[in-house]
Image (cartoon, rainbow, N blue to C red; front, side):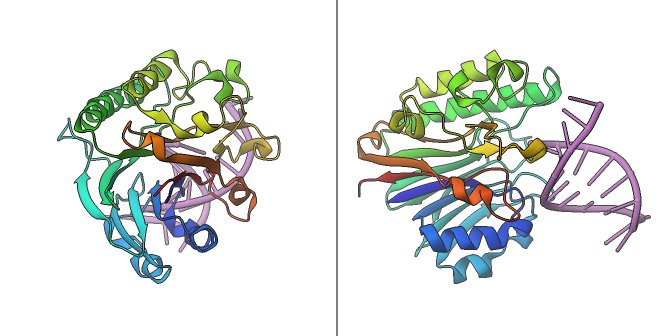
Length: 257
DNA sequence: ATGTCCCCTTGTAGGGGA
């Protein structure tokens, strides 16, 4: 079973690229972030035609997350990250697919830091850590997948010294990610590639992809009940090299059925 | 500071966000 995460950066502009990638790689589950579309503008017909059922949480202009499942309808199991009823940003949705709980998330960017956006990022992170603890305690097979907007270590940044004051790499951000993982989650990509430089995002600026000036910020975290099933974890890097690409590449895990 | 791309607009160029 293949579970992928892909920040599409606008599903309106990215639909052809998304459909091409789905057709080529046929992931069983695809978690999408940054739809940048209101609920009613999700291209459900095209997704269905590609063979996928879908649930999604849209928002005008910003954010937006979706879970696609090949050949079946994802069973929605939660919309919105618990812990703050006043939070109106569409950044979190859960579904059950094939007995696995899939949490698709788009963690706030948080720049500029310090400031209110960074405060929101850290507060959102605390809520995710609380939800993570509940999910670990449940003993369920769970995947946390998405754009975490965190480079966990220096190995995950092309030039770490340039990023130390950025919201994606500040000590508070890395410490929060570590606290989450230390609950018992397995960082699938890093586990399968312990010493490798491996990126999931390249800025549109300054030919970042051509220079391989990338970041590893898209992650798939496996709960203890699921970690023994991990067989492979990779980045579909070639997708970033195409015409009109997202700034993120699809990232995926292969799990033993 | 800059670069680029996406989305929206008492819209068609400019601002906000990443």
